[in-house]
Amino acid sequence: MMAGLSREVRAGGTARQGLLRWGLVGLLLLPLALGGYPLYLATEAALLGLAAVALSLLLGHGGVPSLGQAAFLGLGAYTVGLALKAGLPLGLALLLAPLVAALLALLTGLLVFRTHGIFILMLTLAFGQMVYSAAHKWTGLTGGDDGLSLSGLSIHPVLLHLVAVGVLLAAVGGLRALLQTPYGKTLEAIRQNEEKIRSLGVPTFYYKLSLYLLTAALTGLAGSGLALHRSFISPHDLFWLTSATLMVMVLLGGSRGLWGAVFGALLYTFVQAWVSSFTDLWGLFVGSLLVLTVLFAREGLWPLLERRLGGGRGNA
Amino acid sequence: MLLLLLTQLLNSLAFAMLLFLLALGLSLIFGVARVVNLAHGAFYLLGAYLGLALGASLGSFWLVLLLVPLLVGLLGVLVERFLLRGLHGRELEQVLVTIGLGFILADLLRAFFGAAIRSVPPPAELAGPLFLGSFIYPKYPLFVLVMGVLLFLLVRLLLARTPFGVQVRAVTADPGMASTLGIQPARVSLLTFGIGTALAGLGGVVGAPMIALAPGLDAQMTLFALIVVVIGGLGRIEGAFWGAILVGLVDGFGRLFLPQLAMFLIFALMALVLALKPEGLLGRRLA
Image (cartoon, rainbow over the protein chains, first blue to last red):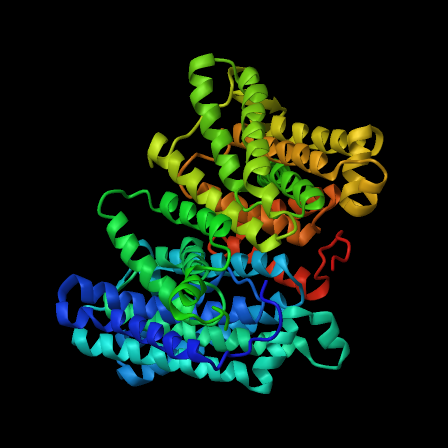
Protein backbone atom coordinates (compact mmCIF):
# COMPACT_ATOMS: atom_id res chain seq x y z
CA MET A 1 0.00 0.00 0.00
CA MET A 2 2.38 2.65 1.23
CA ALA A 3 5.84 1.92 -0.03
CA GLY A 4 8.73 2.41 2.30
CA LEU A 5 8.93 3.60 5.87
CA SER A 6 7.09 6.78 6.65
CA ARG A 7 9.46 9.66 6.32
CA GLU A 8 8.11 13.10 6.99
CA VAL A 9 8.61 15.54 4.19
CA ARG A 10 10.11 18.56 5.88
CA ALA A 11 9.38 20.95 3.05
CA GLY A 12 7.01 23.81 2.44
CA GLY A 13 4.20 21.25 2.42
CA THR A 14 4.43 20.58 6.14
CA ALA A 15 3.45 24.09 7.10
CA ARG A 16 0.23 23.76 5.14
CA GLN A 17 -0.22 20.22 6.46
CA GLY A 18 0.07 21.67 9.94
CA LEU A 19 -2.56 24.22 9.03
CA LEU A 20 -4.85 21.41 7.89
CA ARG A 21 -4.42 19.69 11.25
CA TRP A 22 -5.13 22.91 13.13
CA GLY A 23 -8.23 23.22 10.98
CA LEU A 24 -9.34 19.79 12.17
CA VAL A 25 -8.72 20.74 15.80
CA GLY A 26 -10.64 23.93 15.15
CA LEU A 27 -13.59 21.91 13.84
CA LEU A 28 -13.52 19.84 17.03
CA LEU A 29 -13.50 22.97 19.21
CA LEU A 30 -15.93 25.08 17.19
CA PRO A 31 -19.08 23.49 18.71
CA LEU A 32 -17.99 24.93 22.09
CA ALA A 33 -19.33 28.22 20.80
CA LEU A 34 -22.58 26.61 19.69
CA GLY A 35 -23.30 24.40 22.69
CA GLY A 36 -26.30 22.09 22.79
CA TYR A 37 -26.59 19.24 20.31
CA PRO A 38 -23.56 20.19 18.16
CA LEU A 39 -21.42 20.15 21.29
CA TYR A 40 -22.86 16.78 22.29
CA LEU A 41 -21.98 15.38 18.87
CA ALA A 42 -18.50 16.89 18.92
CA THR A 43 -17.74 15.29 22.29
CA GLU A 44 -19.04 12.00 20.92
CA ALA A 45 -16.76 12.44 17.90
CA ALA A 46 -13.72 13.21 20.05
CA LEU A 47 -14.26 10.14 22.22
CA LEU A 48 -14.98 7.83 19.31
CA GLY A 49 -12.00 9.49 17.63
CA LEU A 50 -9.78 8.25 20.46
CA ALA A 51 -11.01 4.69 19.86
CA ALA A 52 -10.56 5.16 16.11
CA VAL A 53 -7.01 6.45 16.60
CA ALA A 54 -6.25 3.32 18.64
CA LEU A 55 -7.64 1.10 15.89
CA SER A 56 -5.76 3.11 13.28
CA LEU A 57 -2.51 2.48 15.11
CA LEU A 58 -3.34 -1.20 15.42
CA LEU A 59 -4.50 -1.69 11.83
CA GLY A 60 -2.55 0.85 9.82
CA HIS A 61 0.78 0.65 11.62
CA GLY A 62 0.67 -2.70 13.40
CA GLY A 63 -1.10 -4.61 10.64
CA VAL A 64 -3.52 -6.17 13.14
CA PRO A 65 -7.08 -6.18 11.72
CA SER A 66 -9.16 -6.18 14.90
CA LEU A 67 -12.91 -6.46 14.66
CA GLY A 68 -13.46 -6.73 18.39
CA GLN A 69 -12.76 -3.16 19.50
CA ALA A 70 -16.36 -2.71 20.67
CA ALA A 71 -15.58 -5.09 23.53
CA PHE A 72 -12.85 -2.80 24.87
CA LEU A 73 -15.05 0.23 24.43
CA GLY A 74 -17.86 -1.49 26.29
CA LEU A 75 -15.64 -2.90 28.99
CA GLY A 76 -14.26 0.57 29.70
CA ALA A 77 -17.79 1.95 29.87
CA TYR A 78 -19.09 -0.77 32.18
CA THR A 79 -16.01 -0.55 34.41
CA VAL A 80 -16.54 3.15 34.99
CA GLY A 81 -20.27 2.67 35.42
CA LEU A 82 -19.97 -0.16 37.93
CA ALA A 83 -17.07 1.45 39.79
CA LEU A 84 -19.07 4.63 40.26
CA LYS A 85 -22.09 2.61 41.39
CA ALA A 86 -19.85 0.88 43.91
CA GLY A 87 -18.92 4.30 45.28
CA LEU A 88 -15.36 4.57 44.00
CA PRO A 89 -14.10 8.08 43.22
CA LEU A 90 -14.22 9.14 39.56
CA GLY A 91 -10.43 9.31 39.20
CA LEU A 92 -9.98 5.73 40.33
CA ALA A 93 -12.83 4.57 38.08
CA LEU A 94 -11.20 6.25 35.08
CA LEU A 95 -7.93 4.55 35.95
CA LEU A 96 -9.56 1.13 36.27
CA ALA A 97 -11.32 1.28 32.90
CA PRO A 98 -8.23 1.08 30.65
CA LEU A 99 -6.70 -1.51 32.95
CA VAL A 100 -9.70 -3.83 32.70
CA ALA A 101 -9.77 -3.41 28.92
CA ALA A 102 -6.06 -4.19 28.72
CA LEU A 103 -6.59 -7.28 30.87
CA LEU A 104 -9.12 -8.63 28.37
CA ALA A 105 -6.68 -7.80 25.58
CA LEU A 106 -3.99 -9.77 27.37
CA LEU A 107 -6.18 -12.83 27.88
CA THR A 108 -7.52 -12.91 24.32
CA GLY A 109 -4.32 -11.60 22.70
CA LEU A 110 -2.32 -14.55 23.98
CA LEU A 111 -4.61 -16.77 21.88
CA VAL A 112 -5.35 -14.43 18.97
CA PHE A 113 -1.69 -13.85 18.09
CA ARG A 114 -1.04 -17.55 17.75
CA THR A 115 -2.70 -17.11 14.35
CA HIS A 116 -2.13 -14.72 11.46
CA GLY A 117 -3.81 -12.49 8.93
CA ILE A 118 -7.49 -12.94 8.44
CA PHE A 119 -7.73 -15.39 11.36
CA ILE A 120 -6.90 -12.52 13.70
CA LEU A 121 -9.94 -10.70 12.39
CA MET A 122 -12.15 -13.75 12.90
CA LEU A 123 -10.90 -14.35 16.43
CA THR A 124 -11.09 -10.74 17.61
CA LEU A 125 -14.65 -10.76 16.26
CA ALA A 126 -15.48 -13.97 18.12
CA PHE A 127 -14.03 -12.78 21.43
CA GLY A 128 -15.70 -9.41 21.00
CA GLN A 129 -19.06 -11.12 20.58
CA MET A 130 -18.27 -13.17 23.68
CA VAL A 131 -18.05 -9.99 25.73
CA TYR A 132 -21.23 -8.73 24.08
CA SER A 133 -23.18 -11.83 25.03
CA ALA A 134 -21.77 -11.61 28.56
CA ALA A 135 -22.93 -8.00 28.88
CA HIS A 136 -26.28 -8.98 27.45
CA LYS A 137 -26.90 -12.05 29.60
CA TRP A 138 -25.27 -11.13 32.91
CA THR A 139 -28.23 -8.99 33.86
CA GLY A 140 -27.38 -9.00 37.58
CA LEU A 141 -24.26 -7.00 36.87
CA THR A 142 -25.00 -5.01 33.74
CA GLY A 143 -28.76 -4.64 33.79
CA GLY A 144 -28.91 -6.55 30.50
CA ASP A 145 -31.14 -5.04 27.86
CA ASP A 146 -32.25 -2.24 30.18
CA GLY A 147 -28.71 -0.90 30.23
CA LEU A 148 -26.90 0.87 33.02
CA SER A 149 -27.79 4.42 33.90
CA LEU A 150 -25.28 6.86 35.43
CA SER A 151 -27.80 9.47 36.37
CA GLY A 152 -26.31 10.70 39.65
CA LEU A 153 -23.28 12.18 37.98
CA SER A 154 -23.08 15.48 36.22
CA ILE A 155 -19.98 16.78 34.52
CA HIS A 156 -20.20 20.09 32.76
CA PRO A 157 -20.42 19.39 29.00
CA VAL A 158 -17.84 22.06 28.17
CA LEU A 159 -15.36 20.60 30.65
CA LEU A 160 -15.98 17.07 29.37
CA HIS A 161 -15.49 18.24 25.80
CA LEU A 162 -12.24 20.04 26.57
CA VAL A 163 -10.89 17.00 28.41
CA ALA A 164 -11.96 14.67 25.59
CA VAL A 165 -10.30 16.79 22.91
CA GLY A 166 -7.22 17.22 25.11
CA VAL A 167 -6.86 13.48 25.63
CA LEU A 168 -7.44 12.85 21.94
CA LEU A 169 -4.73 15.32 20.87
CA ALA A 170 -2.34 14.01 23.51
CA ALA A 171 -2.96 10.48 22.25
CA VAL A 172 -2.37 11.41 18.61
CA GLY A 173 0.80 13.32 19.51
CA GLY A 174 2.09 10.65 21.86
CA LEU A 175 1.38 7.78 19.50
CA ARG A 176 2.90 9.57 16.50
CA ALA A 177 6.03 10.09 18.62
CA LEU A 178 5.90 6.43 19.58
CA LEU A 179 5.93 5.49 15.90
CA GLN A 180 9.27 7.27 15.53
CA THR A 181 10.94 5.26 18.31
CA PRO A 182 12.74 1.97 17.65
CA TYR A 183 9.61 0.22 18.99
CA GLY A 184 7.45 2.00 16.43
CA LYS A 185 9.87 1.35 13.59
CA THR A 186 9.96 -2.33 14.50
CA LEU A 187 6.17 -2.51 14.46
CA GLU A 188 6.18 -0.92 11.03
CA ALA A 189 8.70 -3.48 9.84
CA ILE A 190 6.65 -6.34 11.29
CA ARG A 191 3.61 -5.09 9.42
CA GLN A 192 5.54 -5.14 6.17
CA ASN A 193 7.26 -8.48 6.54
CA GLU A 194 6.79 -10.40 9.74
CA GLU A 195 8.69 -13.50 8.63
CA LYS A 196 11.80 -11.50 7.88
CA ILE A 197 11.72 -9.60 11.16
CA ARG A 198 11.16 -12.77 13.15
CA SER A 199 14.09 -14.41 11.44
CA LEU A 200 16.20 -11.48 12.67
CA GLY A 201 15.41 -12.65 16.18
CA VAL A 202 12.75 -10.07 17.05
CA PRO A 203 9.99 -11.52 19.26
CA THR A 204 7.20 -10.27 16.98
CA PHE A 205 4.53 -11.97 19.12
CA TYR A 206 5.28 -9.67 22.07
CA TYR A 207 5.46 -6.58 19.88
CA LYS A 208 2.00 -7.26 18.54
CA LEU A 209 0.63 -8.26 21.94
CA SER A 210 1.97 -5.12 23.62
CA LEU A 211 0.53 -2.95 20.86
CA TYR A 212 -2.80 -4.74 21.31
CA LEU A 213 -2.73 -4.03 25.07
CA LEU A 214 -1.89 -0.37 24.51
CA THR A 215 -4.66 0.17 21.99
CA ALA A 216 -7.15 -1.77 24.12
CA ALA A 217 -6.34 0.47 27.08
CA LEU A 218 -6.89 3.59 24.97
CA THR A 219 -10.16 2.18 23.66
CA GLY A 220 -11.21 1.37 27.21
CA LEU A 221 -10.48 4.96 28.20
CA ALA A 222 -12.56 6.17 25.26
CA GLY A 223 -15.36 3.86 26.42
CA SER A 224 -15.26 5.28 29.93
CA GLY A 225 -15.50 8.76 28.47
CA LEU A 226 -18.50 7.73 26.38
CA ALA A 227 -20.21 6.33 29.48
CA LEU A 228 -19.78 9.65 31.29
CA HIS A 229 -20.82 11.56 28.20
CA ARG A 230 -24.00 9.59 27.48
CA SER A 231 -24.69 8.80 31.18
CA PHE A 232 -26.02 5.51 29.88
CA ILE A 233 -24.48 2.20 28.84
CA SER A 234 -26.31 -0.20 26.58
CA PRO A 235 -25.07 -3.74 25.89
CA HIS A 236 -25.94 -3.18 22.22
CA ASP A 237 -23.00 -0.80 21.94
CA LEU A 238 -20.81 -3.89 22.38
CA PHE A 239 -22.27 -5.57 19.31
CA TRP A 240 -19.87 -6.01 16.39
CA LEU A 241 -21.68 -3.29 14.47
CA THR A 242 -19.79 -0.86 16.72
CA SER A 243 -16.48 -2.51 15.86
CA ALA A 244 -17.36 -2.22 12.19
CA THR A 245 -18.31 1.42 12.72
CA LEU A 246 -14.87 2.14 14.15
CA MET A 247 -13.41 0.34 11.15
CA VAL A 248 -15.47 2.59 8.85
CA MET A 249 -14.15 5.70 10.63
CA VAL A 250 -10.57 4.55 10.26
CA LEU A 251 -10.91 3.56 6.60
CA LEU A 252 -12.92 6.65 5.74
CA GLY A 253 -10.24 8.93 7.12
CA GLY A 254 -7.29 6.75 6.14
CA SER A 255 -5.73 4.08 8.28
CA ARG A 256 -2.26 5.59 8.48
CA GLY A 257 -0.94 8.62 10.26
CA LEU A 258 -3.65 8.73 12.97
CA TRP A 259 -4.96 12.16 11.92
CA GLY A 260 -7.09 10.36 9.35
CA ALA A 261 -8.86 8.44 12.10
CA VAL A 262 -9.72 11.68 13.92
CA PHE A 263 -11.08 13.14 10.70
CA GLY A 264 -12.98 9.92 9.94
CA ALA A 265 -14.57 9.87 13.39
CA LEU A 266 -15.64 13.51 13.13
CA LEU A 267 -17.02 13.08 9.63
CA TYR A 268 -18.82 9.85 10.48
CA THR A 269 -20.41 11.20 13.66
CA PHE A 270 -21.91 14.21 11.95
CA VAL A 271 -23.00 12.35 8.81
CA GLN A 272 -24.58 9.71 11.03
CA ALA A 273 -26.50 12.33 13.00
CA TRP A 274 -27.77 13.75 9.75
CA VAL A 275 -28.71 10.37 8.28
CA SER A 276 -30.45 9.21 11.45
CA SER A 277 -32.80 12.17 11.17
CA PHE A 278 -34.56 10.46 8.27
CA THR A 279 -33.94 6.72 8.56
CA ASP A 280 -33.46 4.08 11.23
CA LEU A 281 -31.86 1.61 8.83
CA TRP A 282 -28.67 1.69 10.76
CA GLY A 283 -26.95 -1.39 9.44
CA LEU A 284 -27.82 -0.42 5.88
CA PHE A 285 -26.05 2.90 6.37
CA VAL A 286 -22.91 1.54 8.06
CA GLY A 287 -22.76 -1.39 5.65
CA SER A 288 -23.08 0.75 2.52
CA LEU A 289 -20.52 3.20 3.82
CA LEU A 290 -18.12 0.33 4.54
CA VAL A 291 -18.54 -1.18 1.06
CA LEU A 292 -18.22 2.18 -0.68
CA THR A 293 -15.17 3.20 1.33
CA VAL A 294 -13.38 -0.05 0.57
CA LEU A 295 -14.26 0.09 -3.11
CA PHE A 296 -13.70 3.77 -3.83
CA ALA A 297 -11.59 5.39 -1.13
CA ARG A 298 -8.88 2.86 -0.51
CA GLU A 299 -6.42 5.26 1.06
CA GLY A 300 -9.04 7.25 2.92
CA LEU A 301 -10.06 10.87 2.60
CA TRP A 302 -7.49 12.54 4.85
CA PRO A 303 -4.43 11.69 2.70
CA LEU A 304 -6.45 12.95 -0.25
CA LEU A 305 -7.07 16.25 1.53
CA GLU A 306 -3.44 16.51 2.55
CA ARG A 307 -2.37 16.08 -1.06
CA ARG A 308 -4.93 18.48 -2.46
CA LEU A 309 -4.75 21.20 0.15
CA GLY A 310 -1.61 20.55 2.11
CA GLY A 311 0.78 19.98 -0.76
CA GLY A 312 2.34 17.13 1.22
CA ARG A 313 2.62 13.51 0.24
CA GLY A 314 -0.41 12.55 2.21
CA ASN A 315 1.56 9.82 3.88
CA ALA A 316 2.41 9.41 7.57
CA MET B 1 -33.01 -39.49 32.39
CA LEU B 2 -31.57 -41.69 29.68
CA LEU B 3 -34.37 -40.69 27.34
CA LEU B 4 -33.74 -37.04 28.12
CA LEU B 5 -30.08 -37.45 27.28
CA LEU B 6 -30.93 -39.25 24.06
CA THR B 7 -33.36 -36.49 23.09
CA GLN B 8 -30.76 -33.85 23.77
CA LEU B 9 -28.15 -35.82 21.86
CA LEU B 10 -30.39 -35.90 18.80
CA ASN B 11 -31.26 -32.21 19.19
CA SER B 12 -27.60 -31.33 19.41
CA LEU B 13 -26.72 -33.38 16.37
CA ALA B 14 -29.54 -31.88 14.32
CA PHE B 15 -28.31 -28.40 15.26
CA ALA B 16 -24.79 -29.55 14.43
CA MET B 17 -25.91 -30.50 10.92
CA LEU B 18 -27.30 -27.00 10.47
CA LEU B 19 -23.95 -25.58 11.57
CA PHE B 20 -22.27 -27.98 9.17
CA LEU B 21 -24.25 -26.56 6.24
CA LEU B 22 -23.03 -23.07 7.15
CA ALA B 23 -19.46 -24.04 7.94
CA LEU B 24 -19.22 -26.13 4.77
CA GLY B 25 -20.08 -23.13 2.61
CA LEU B 26 -17.74 -20.87 4.56
CA SER B 27 -14.95 -23.39 4.34
CA LEU B 28 -15.36 -24.10 0.61
CA ILE B 29 -15.39 -20.38 -0.17
CA PHE B 30 -12.34 -19.74 1.97
CA GLY B 31 -10.46 -22.65 0.42
CA VAL B 32 -11.03 -21.57 -3.16
CA ALA B 33 -11.48 -17.80 -3.08
CA ARG B 34 -9.50 -17.08 0.13
CA VAL B 35 -12.42 -14.95 1.28
CA VAL B 36 -13.83 -15.24 4.78
CA ASN B 37 -17.45 -14.52 4.01
CA LEU B 38 -18.76 -12.69 7.04
CA ALA B 39 -22.08 -12.15 5.27
CA HIS B 40 -22.69 -15.89 5.62
CA GLY B 41 -25.20 -15.55 8.44
CA ALA B 42 -27.02 -12.88 6.44
CA PHE B 43 -27.29 -15.31 3.50
CA TYR B 44 -28.67 -17.87 5.95
CA LEU B 45 -31.27 -15.38 7.18
CA LEU B 46 -32.10 -14.38 3.60
CA GLY B 47 -32.68 -18.07 2.78
CA ALA B 48 -34.90 -18.46 5.81
CA TYR B 49 -37.06 -15.40 5.09
CA LEU B 50 -37.25 -16.24 1.38
CA GLY B 51 -38.35 -19.72 2.40
CA LEU B 52 -41.00 -18.21 4.64
CA ALA B 53 -42.29 -15.90 1.90
CA LEU B 54 -42.17 -18.45 -0.94
CA GLY B 55 -43.54 -21.22 1.27
CA ALA B 56 -46.61 -19.11 1.89
CA SER B 57 -47.21 -18.48 -1.81
CA LEU B 58 -46.05 -21.79 -3.32
CA GLY B 59 -47.26 -24.06 -0.56
CA SER B 60 -44.65 -26.75 -1.15
CA PHE B 61 -41.70 -27.12 1.23
CA TRP B 62 -39.80 -29.27 -1.27
CA LEU B 63 -40.10 -26.75 -4.06
CA VAL B 64 -38.87 -24.05 -1.69
CA LEU B 65 -36.01 -26.28 -0.62
CA LEU B 66 -34.93 -26.41 -4.25
CA LEU B 67 -35.68 -22.85 -5.28
CA VAL B 68 -34.31 -20.78 -2.40
CA PRO B 69 -30.73 -22.08 -2.54
CA LEU B 70 -30.74 -21.32 -6.27
CA LEU B 71 -31.83 -17.73 -5.64
CA VAL B 72 -29.42 -17.17 -2.77
CA GLY B 73 -26.61 -18.81 -4.75
CA LEU B 74 -27.36 -16.51 -7.67
CA LEU B 75 -27.02 -13.51 -5.39
CA GLY B 76 -23.74 -14.97 -4.15
CA VAL B 77 -22.46 -15.25 -7.72
CA LEU B 78 -23.36 -11.62 -8.38
CA VAL B 79 -21.60 -10.53 -5.20
CA GLU B 80 -18.46 -12.41 -6.12
CA ARG B 81 -18.45 -11.11 -9.66
CA PHE B 82 -19.22 -7.45 -9.00
CA LEU B 83 -17.96 -6.73 -5.50
CA LEU B 84 -15.21 -9.17 -4.60
CA ARG B 85 -13.50 -10.02 -7.89
CA GLY B 86 -11.98 -6.56 -8.22
CA LEU B 87 -10.41 -6.89 -4.78
CA HIS B 88 -8.71 -10.17 -5.57
CA GLY B 89 -5.80 -10.91 -3.25
CA ARG B 90 -6.73 -8.13 -0.82
CA GLU B 91 -8.01 -10.27 2.02
CA LEU B 92 -8.84 -7.53 4.49
CA GLU B 93 -10.74 -5.43 1.97
CA GLN B 94 -12.75 -8.43 0.81
CA VAL B 95 -13.72 -9.35 4.35
CA LEU B 96 -14.76 -5.77 5.04
CA VAL B 97 -16.96 -5.80 1.95
CA THR B 98 -18.66 -9.01 3.10
CA ILE B 99 -19.20 -7.47 6.55
CA GLY B 100 -20.79 -4.42 4.99
CA LEU B 101 -22.90 -6.59 2.74
CA GLY B 102 -24.04 -8.64 5.73
CA PHE B 103 -25.22 -5.52 7.57
CA ILE B 104 -27.01 -4.27 4.45
CA LEU B 105 -28.80 -7.59 3.85
CA ALA B 106 -29.78 -8.06 7.48
CA ASP B 107 -31.12 -4.53 7.75
CA LEU B 108 -33.11 -4.81 4.51
CA LEU B 109 -34.61 -8.08 5.77
CA ARG B 110 -35.58 -6.37 9.02
CA ALA B 111 -37.14 -3.49 7.11
CA PHE B 112 -39.05 -5.86 4.84
CA PHE B 113 -40.16 -8.61 7.21
CA GLY B 114 -40.28 -6.62 10.43
CA ALA B 115 -38.52 -7.20 13.71
CA ALA B 116 -41.06 -9.67 15.11
CA ILE B 117 -39.93 -13.20 15.88
CA ARG B 118 -41.31 -15.59 13.25
CA SER B 119 -41.51 -19.30 13.77
CA VAL B 120 -41.94 -21.50 10.73
CA PRO B 121 -43.84 -24.81 10.99
CA PRO B 122 -42.20 -27.89 9.49
CA PRO B 123 -43.84 -29.32 6.35
CA ALA B 124 -46.86 -31.57 6.94
CA GLU B 125 -44.95 -34.74 5.99
CA LEU B 126 -42.34 -34.07 8.65
CA ALA B 127 -44.55 -32.56 11.34
CA GLY B 128 -45.39 -34.44 14.49
CA PRO B 129 -43.47 -36.99 16.50
CA LEU B 130 -42.12 -40.44 15.78
CA PHE B 131 -42.96 -43.21 18.24
CA LEU B 132 -40.21 -45.72 18.98
CA GLY B 133 -41.56 -47.73 21.88
CA SER B 134 -41.37 -45.46 24.90
CA PHE B 135 -39.16 -42.98 23.05
CA ILE B 136 -40.98 -40.15 21.35
CA TYR B 137 -39.11 -37.72 19.13
CA PRO B 138 -40.18 -35.14 16.54
CA LYS B 139 -39.59 -36.14 12.93
CA TYR B 140 -38.17 -32.86 11.70
CA PRO B 141 -34.80 -32.80 13.51
CA LEU B 142 -34.27 -36.41 12.39
CA PHE B 143 -34.79 -35.28 8.81
CA VAL B 144 -32.20 -32.52 9.26
CA LEU B 145 -29.80 -35.00 10.82
CA VAL B 146 -30.10 -37.50 7.98
CA MET B 147 -29.90 -34.77 5.36
CA GLY B 148 -26.73 -33.34 6.92
CA VAL B 149 -24.94 -36.68 6.98
CA LEU B 150 -26.01 -37.48 3.41
CA LEU B 151 -24.86 -34.07 2.23
CA PHE B 152 -21.48 -34.55 3.91
CA LEU B 153 -21.00 -37.88 2.14
CA LEU B 154 -22.25 -36.49 -1.16
CA VAL B 155 -19.97 -33.43 -1.09
CA ARG B 156 -17.01 -35.62 -0.18
CA LEU B 157 -17.78 -37.86 -3.12
CA LEU B 158 -18.27 -34.93 -5.48
CA LEU B 159 -14.98 -33.35 -4.42
CA ALA B 160 -13.14 -36.64 -4.84
CA ARG B 161 -14.65 -37.90 -8.08
CA THR B 162 -16.09 -35.19 -10.32
CA PRO B 163 -14.01 -32.96 -12.61
CA PHE B 164 -15.33 -29.84 -10.88
CA GLY B 165 -14.48 -31.35 -7.48
CA VAL B 166 -10.94 -31.97 -8.63
CA GLN B 167 -10.71 -28.37 -9.86
CA VAL B 168 -11.95 -27.09 -6.50
CA ARG B 169 -9.34 -29.14 -4.67
CA ALA B 170 -6.63 -28.03 -7.07
CA VAL B 171 -7.43 -24.34 -6.66
CA THR B 172 -7.68 -24.77 -2.89
CA ALA B 173 -4.24 -26.36 -2.80
CA ASP B 174 -2.46 -23.95 -5.14
CA PRO B 175 -4.26 -21.48 -7.41
CA GLY B 176 -1.12 -20.58 -9.35
CA MET B 177 -0.25 -24.16 -10.16
CA ALA B 178 -3.89 -24.95 -10.96
CA SER B 179 -4.05 -22.16 -13.52
CA THR B 180 -0.92 -23.41 -15.29
CA LEU B 181 -2.75 -26.73 -15.67
CA GLY B 182 -5.54 -25.05 -17.59
CA ILE B 183 -7.97 -24.56 -14.70
CA GLN B 184 -9.51 -21.09 -14.50
CA PRO B 185 -9.35 -20.17 -10.79
CA ALA B 186 -11.62 -17.18 -11.36
CA ARG B 187 -14.39 -19.38 -12.77
CA VAL B 188 -13.99 -22.02 -10.04
CA SER B 189 -14.01 -19.25 -7.47
CA LEU B 190 -17.22 -17.79 -8.88
CA LEU B 191 -19.02 -21.13 -8.88
CA THR B 192 -17.75 -22.05 -5.43
CA PHE B 193 -18.96 -18.75 -4.05
CA GLY B 194 -22.36 -19.48 -5.54
CA ILE B 195 -22.41 -23.00 -4.09
CA GLY B 196 -21.24 -21.78 -0.70
CA THR B 197 -23.89 -19.10 -0.43
CA ALA B 198 -26.50 -21.52 -1.78
CA LEU B 199 -25.59 -23.85 1.09
CA ALA B 200 -26.13 -20.98 3.52
CA GLY B 201 -29.53 -20.35 1.90
CA LEU B 202 -30.35 -24.06 2.14
CA GLY B 203 -29.36 -23.88 5.79
CA GLY B 204 -31.84 -21.04 6.22
CA VAL B 205 -34.73 -23.01 4.71
CA VAL B 206 -33.88 -26.17 6.64
CA GLY B 207 -33.12 -24.34 9.86
CA ALA B 208 -36.20 -22.11 9.97
CA PRO B 209 -38.51 -24.76 11.54
CA MET B 210 -35.87 -25.41 14.21
CA ILE B 211 -34.68 -21.90 15.04
CA ALA B 212 -37.22 -19.07 15.03
CA LEU B 213 -36.40 -16.17 12.71
CA ALA B 214 -35.51 -12.86 14.26
CA PRO B 215 -33.22 -9.93 13.52
CA GLY B 216 -29.78 -10.63 14.94
CA LEU B 217 -29.93 -14.30 14.02
CA ASP B 218 -27.59 -13.55 11.11
CA ALA B 219 -24.78 -12.40 13.41
CA GLN B 220 -25.34 -15.38 15.66
CA MET B 221 -25.13 -17.85 12.78
CA THR B 222 -22.04 -16.17 11.30
CA LEU B 223 -20.42 -16.41 14.70
CA PHE B 224 -21.32 -20.09 15.07
CA ALA B 225 -19.98 -20.85 11.60
CA LEU B 226 -16.74 -19.00 12.37
CA ILE B 227 -16.26 -20.87 15.62
CA VAL B 228 -16.90 -24.19 13.87
CA VAL B 229 -14.28 -23.54 11.21
CA VAL B 230 -11.79 -22.19 13.72
CA ILE B 231 -12.22 -25.35 15.78
CA GLY B 232 -12.42 -27.79 12.90
CA GLY B 233 -9.92 -26.10 10.63
CA LEU B 234 -10.65 -24.02 7.55
CA GLY B 235 -10.52 -25.30 4.01
CA ARG B 236 -11.46 -28.93 4.70
CA ILE B 237 -14.96 -30.34 4.74
CA GLU B 238 -14.05 -32.93 7.39
CA GLY B 239 -13.04 -30.04 9.61
CA ALA B 240 -16.41 -28.39 9.07
CA PHE B 241 -18.26 -31.66 9.77
CA TRP B 242 -16.52 -32.76 12.94
CA GLY B 243 -16.14 -29.19 14.17
CA ALA B 244 -19.89 -28.71 13.75
CA ILE B 245 -20.63 -31.91 15.67
CA LEU B 246 -18.31 -30.89 18.50
CA VAL B 247 -19.81 -27.39 18.75
CA GLY B 248 -23.35 -28.79 18.46
CA LEU B 249 -22.75 -31.25 21.30
CA VAL B 250 -21.07 -28.72 23.57
CA ASP B 251 -23.88 -26.24 22.88
CA GLY B 252 -26.69 -28.76 23.37
CA PHE B 253 -25.40 -30.38 26.55
CA GLY B 254 -24.16 -27.02 27.82
CA ARG B 255 -27.72 -25.71 27.55
CA LEU B 256 -29.01 -28.78 29.37
CA PHE B 257 -26.60 -28.78 32.31
CA LEU B 258 -25.25 -25.22 32.55
CA PRO B 259 -27.81 -23.04 30.77
CA GLN B 260 -26.18 -19.79 31.92
CA LEU B 261 -22.78 -20.75 30.60
CA ALA B 262 -23.59 -22.58 27.35
CA MET B 263 -22.19 -19.88 25.07
CA PHE B 264 -19.05 -19.56 27.18
CA LEU B 265 -18.38 -23.27 26.99
CA ILE B 266 -18.18 -22.88 23.23
CA PHE B 267 -15.78 -19.96 23.51
CA ALA B 268 -13.75 -21.93 26.05
CA LEU B 269 -13.62 -24.83 23.60
CA MET B 270 -12.43 -22.48 20.88
CA ALA B 271 -9.79 -20.98 23.19
CA LEU B 272 -8.60 -24.45 24.13
CA VAL B 273 -8.27 -25.53 20.49
CA LEU B 274 -6.43 -22.31 19.66
CA ALA B 275 -4.04 -22.78 22.54
CA LEU B 276 -3.25 -26.37 21.57
CA LYS B 277 -3.60 -26.35 17.80
CA PRO B 278 -4.04 -22.87 16.28
CA GLU B 279 -4.71 -24.26 12.80
CA GLY B 280 -7.79 -26.14 14.02
CA LEU B 281 -8.24 -29.79 14.88
CA LEU B 282 -8.26 -31.02 11.28
CA GLY B 283 -6.77 -27.95 9.65
CA ARG B 284 -3.67 -27.59 7.62
CA ARG B 285 -1.06 -25.05 8.55
CA LEU B 286 -1.80 -21.86 6.63
CA ALA B 287 0.77 -19.19 6.17
